[in-house]
Structure formats: structure tokens, C-alpha cells
Image (cartoon, rainbow, N blue to C red):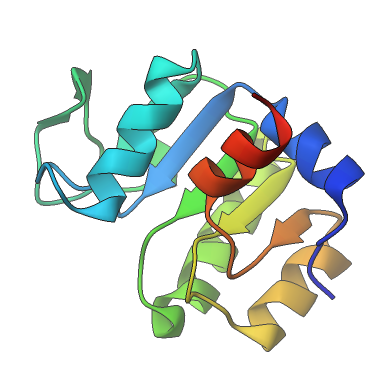
Length: 140
């Protein structure tokens, strides 16, 4: 059961280091504009996109395992059918580094089985919600 209460959402929005899986280098796309907004709010954004070299002034990496810094939250901008693989990759990273605490699936993105698996492993999960919208509603 993915998180939806405001207190937990505020807690997640208080996390600073965000890996954005599917971060886009194309201005105008939600997968570019929302991470750019979060970056302007002071969040440390780590773009994950195997088809880009740099996004938002940061080196883009091919996978979560290539991020050398600690991350708190994985923000997902990929189709729902890719969520299970992203959850597996997140759990692999968490097993080795212990740093990821949450997964945030953007608007329209959901996978009940993957959410259950992530939560069973101790991660907090938000699905089908926009981080920018929730930030503006709860943090400004």
C-alpha cells in the first residue's frame, strides 16, 4: 500500500539526495522540468539516463549502481512496466550501500507487485503522484 498521508510525504520531501531514473535532457518534458524544479529548490539531483551524458549540469549515469554519492530517494520517470526492474535495481543498491530509503513513482506510474516488494524490503513507496505538485502543496 503506497504512501499517501501528508506527514509521510513531507518527510520524503525532506530528503535531499534524489536519483531520477528516466531524467530527460529535453526541456519541456516533465522528466526534465520536474527534476529542474527540484534542483532549483535545493535538492541534489542525480540523473539516470543511459542515452545522455549530462542533464541539469550533472553527469548522467546509466544505472543507479553507477551513482557514487549517497542517495536518499529514487524518483521514477519510466513506464509502469519498467518499475519492477527499477525496484530490483534499487533493492540491489540498498543491499550493498544501505542508502536508499524511498521510491517515488511519478504521476501515472504504478506497479502493485513491485510496490509490495519494495515495501517488504523496508522502503517507503509513493506511486502515481508528482513530486513537484506535492512539494508546492506541502513545502512552500
